[in-house]
Image (cartoon, rainbow, N blue to C red; front, side, top):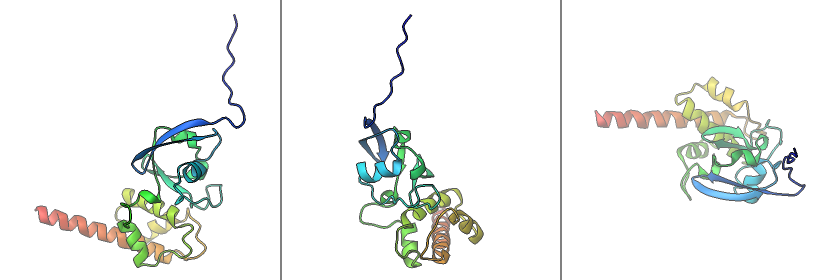
Length: 178
């Protein structure tokens, strides 16, 4: 009885990956060892995803995978097959800023901007899970990011401001429907 050996990809051979990027189905090709961060940037042109440490420590590469913040430098592109990926480019409609981005602008919560995309993606995920955070909770969440420019204080202020404005909008909407 002869057994067929398992298929083994050859060096340089590529496979197709289809995913939903910021609401649009996109496809590209990669080697099975290619990182999601590199696939997004080089194959799909989502250059807002930055690559810093490539060890999952700095947070610059943070994206949402099926609605959850993940480090794209620790995720293989092939793991995203058939899944939804959201990057900083998808936080707001084209040519506009979302409320979180506006809060960052109001509070000057960025300087060089390299880490900002990843921080925004983590903050967006965090505010979905913790809509009315304390300063301590925001600081704890931000401990997963490395920013060498801002000192974090303006970032904390921006996240708290965004949360407060969202809460006020919800209360106003509830009062209008009462």
